[in-house]
Image 1: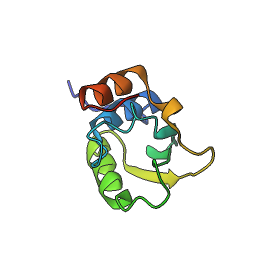
Image 2: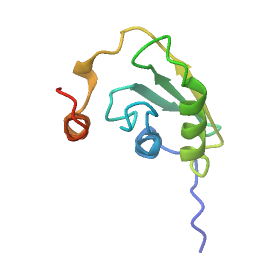
Image 3: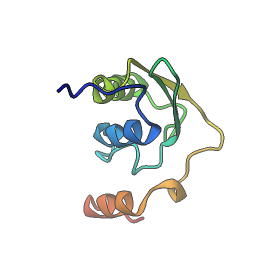
Length: 109
């Protein structure tokens, strides 16, 4: 019996894989930082992630995009990131787990 999945991955499976994508500056994953706004997967098993960054001037988009593709390569045929800036990211988007991780690093959140 094969472990091959029938049909496209679910948005939840893609989101779960994105926990392996770590913001290079903060060392916290992009999901807990609240940077992932949404995930869709089409019938061709191509995932689109609506994602933002803490700043539109962030120079690390390529690093994060490469990490995201690597994290999902065995799950989806392709991953595309739709960089969005509205609504703007704010500390209110950080999950409770993300806040705990940031506190452990010495941030006051």
